[in-house]
Length: 229
Image (cartoon, rainbow, N blue to C red; front, side):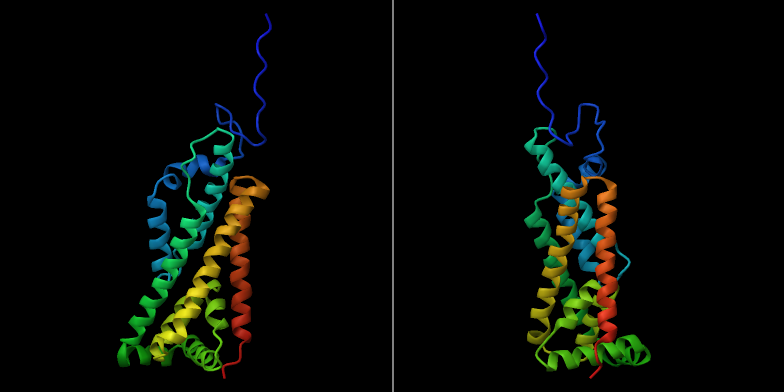
């Protein structure tokens, strides 16, 4: 009697021995991304990178989104557990932490007093950013705040500059919120759709991270071209 035919395998599915590389990212970081703690880790990283810009918050968001894409596709195929990061919660965590971090830096600079004022006066970068931000907000536009969210250390410079210049919260907060949402959506989309197009491999994650850095370089270039007054 002939053996029953094996069920068809879904493209990119992971076999029993895990011999496919399609879900390589999920296999490596599955213990982390499959836990609710991933949202806390993303939030903490994004919150504090306004003070420590070297924190890999963008890389963490992209990796979690890549794992979410891999897990979602595999769960549909019945290959792996469906316990993966939720894209909406991941985006909300990153965006909310971004705004809270901006406001923390803003308040800290607001209360910094003369010592911070002297530090800004000695730093050409902070001084120019403060002037440009003031001019942008005075014109009723805060595109500079959004651009700064993507530029390396730009978020720190703009948030501290806004607080030191005593800019009104109602002028700064809406643009900070728009910047946080834009950055979070862009970062999550890079990880998620990168995995959809290239597979949930480290290559997809690397390409997505390069795209994030590319956006940062472009934002930094545009910020330098902004008139100071």
